[in-house]
Image 1 (tube, rainbow, N blue to C red):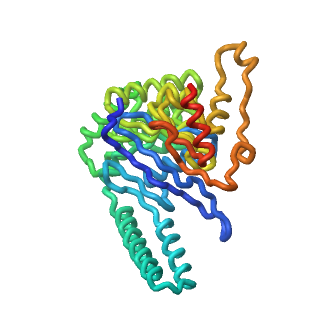
Image 2 (image 1 turned 135 degrees about the vertical axis):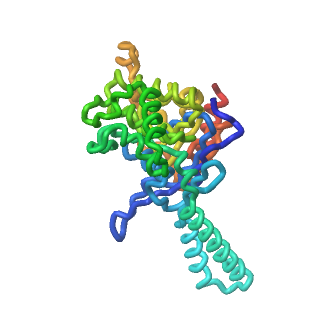
Image 3 (image 1 turned 120 degrees about the horizontal axis):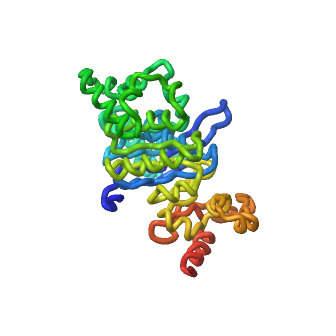
Length: 357
């Protein structure tokens, strides 16, 4: 179970932007914040293209983040500089038209402070402890594309150990065999190639590759979306067993809320690059507050013909469901541990819903 007193990973105001051309930018992840406690499974859900995978790849430093910070075990491993540059540019712009000496001094102090923070962020990002980052491993979504077809299973699983500098062949072989048996495969599979395995077996190889590094945090990026329904339960149960046996923490990225509810302690819901709701798993299903969360929940099929016959799909329309002309939304705590992206009016309405139940 999660350790309530120890935050393993903290994501603060994460932004990941991709420039499309000279005049447009794709805000794949926009000002997302959350933390993950040691030993818990944190589910990250949302429709395809909402920024879930980009968030995971940014945390593990596959991308250089645009803005914000990622802290792991108390150390900042990722840092972006856009927020500092924007603050400096805004202060310089104000200085051009400012005549008040006191205000000019304040603006100079702001510029100096932002430059110092930006320098510290750049240093932390560049000199992040590689050994610490190796404690974060990722299980990729596609079990075919993520495995090198020219490498044997033994080489695929052992690659991280080799990069780490381990040269003892006997130690590496024993470690590979141990990981294969841990994920439900056998030693004889080590000499085979990825194309000789089924989809579920390939995904188990991906799990073994991540576990061989003895990680503290595993980012599971939709590890079951490319698998048959019968195989999905096996992979979920495998991850659940590994979580209990090895005490690893998991960031579980998916778009299937029914699976996430079964597997996760807390759930964050993303829409269009933003985190719109975050709560404990039971609380989120008991009190889905944001209209997009209610829309996702309404799409979950149930093994009940009578229920399915009368199930009404809720369609989320941001323009119709929100009025942000006078008050802009921010991520706020509606009740202890339950956060929603809302403005003042919506916050009052959400609190009434929670209190009425």
